[in-house]
Image (cartoon, rainbow, N blue to C red; front, side):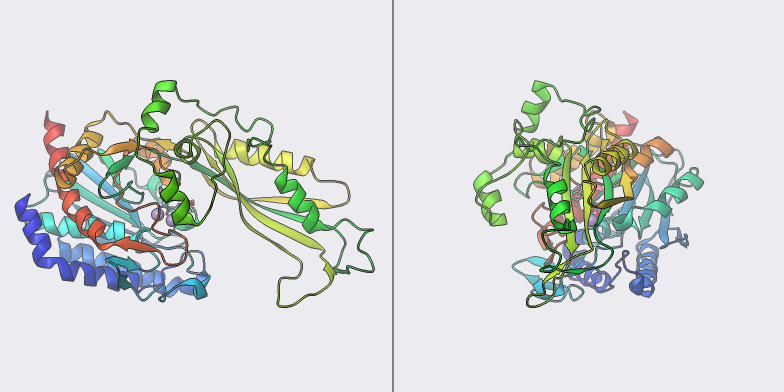
Length: 457
Ligand code: BES
Ligand code: MN
Ligand code: MN
């Protein structure tokens, strides 16, 4: 352990400088204007994997953004860890809300502020540096394969195809991912589940053109009003989702499992004050930990229509739209929920408007075992570097490829995330604690060490 710490200590500044260089690439996957930057980012990672000691490094083209693959096979008879991460990021908008520009990483208060600082460049790059650390402190104890993709934030469609087409190349014993959160450095935790996702766009059309709201208002249904009513009706007075059949496949946890989940430290006052809200909201009968971990939800991600420019324009809009997502839990299925939503939403539209529902991407929920060799290795690694055993907890976010790893490669995943829920993922002023970055770099080699050791027992 101490030589790992020594190596990290001696190379600290360079590890940070390299991450900063990575963060300066605006590798936004949702917007094609960044295509060139995306390609440069992939090349940068490939170069860094090579210089860290990977044997076979490839930038694999796909129909979309390339996948960076690299490996170091020390001995085919030893266990193999497949490290997954993503180098693409969410769009930085709204830019005016950033205190410093999203692609000019800046340190304030011990935290790196930049788009991708936590999700997922900062966390993914810990694995590249941990790999370098291992190469310089006695070598890696396990075979390692890296697969770093550039389309996670837009649904990982091409990665899915890549996985199906490269089963042998990707053969491994476990998938290791740092793209989730822990409670805090004082309360390390390991996520043991991810929610699935159904994402749709809805459009309500009223009159065939925008109308003068005085001349026609009162006689013609306003699509914005109708849309608001329809959306409101999707939750009842207990904040239960009203789509028929929505909860049919939800796996209810036992009393004991729920009690165990709720043992995780949670400070409601701090949670509210961090978010600037006076009261929490959610499904009746469940705690906040449950509402964000083991219960499905429905959210409006964006809503628009009519005049939103400066000043006032009196207009009855022709159209109104919204982007709606549902987070899913075991054993809900994305395709089923998408179609239940579609049927229901079409059925509640009044005759005064037309409704169009367009499904976007989806993904299945996943749970990871806590009794596996890999989970135990992660537990031991964290216990050694944090001085405390990690608390298992369920994550609210989604990484759809995790369910696919299991389906296509038969592989379970360990979610060893070092971010915090409050790191402003997908939001202005995304950040990552420098302390978490170094802690991750120190902890990952221990995972490899214990995974190798425990695999032999
Ligand atoms: N890293 C996140 C997922 C995440 C964040 C999991 C925090 C657990 C805790 C990932 O990059 C992400 O944002 N996923 C998307 C889904 C994807 C299909 C766009 C999400 O959860 O919205
Ligand atoms: Mn991510
Ligand atoms: Mn993300």
